[in-house]
Length: 244
Image 1: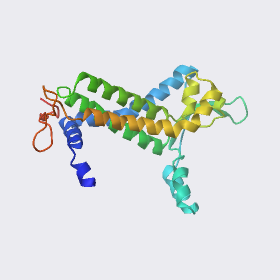
Image 2: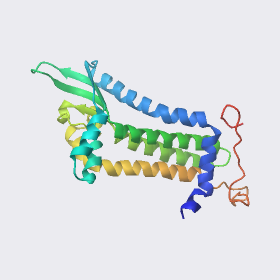
Image 3: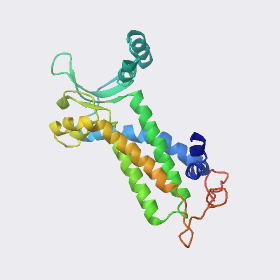
């Protein structure tokens, strides 16, 4: 069954689309996390009209090693590691003794990895749309783009890494909703649905790839496939990594 999936025409079209524009795929994949975190940082600056006044770097590797050494149950290790921070930037209010963090943005390697995967999936959707413009109908392209865009938005929303003192300084994706203006109590209530929203987002992204990699139709409405099972809309490469 695994061999059949790896040799499927849809997967062949996806690989071909990525190979046709490798530089674009890599640029979107790596650029997505950069734009994502800069966007969150810009949202904080606009919302609070103040610059950050502290940064802190955490010994993530040392903390992970300590968690592995001191946690007896492996089923508990991964959730704990998933909460570890690598870097934090924010604004501290020193009006109350040693100070309290009013708001902050933090980098969590686990969530960063998810955003990198999200960037790779988004890049694949973009490459596939560009590669199959001639083979796909307008409705298929629009449907695939809509599913991919909504899926990316849902996954991105549920991996926001912000903390705000109004939300009890609890770092959570719903803090982003509260900062954008949604009621704090409503935002905290939505937190319980985070996993389901994230799964739905990834599901929509995969559905987008499935739709966009579908077999093209000929003029008479029948599948335009070759005897080998792949469509004949081959995407030639140029020296710059883009299709001719």
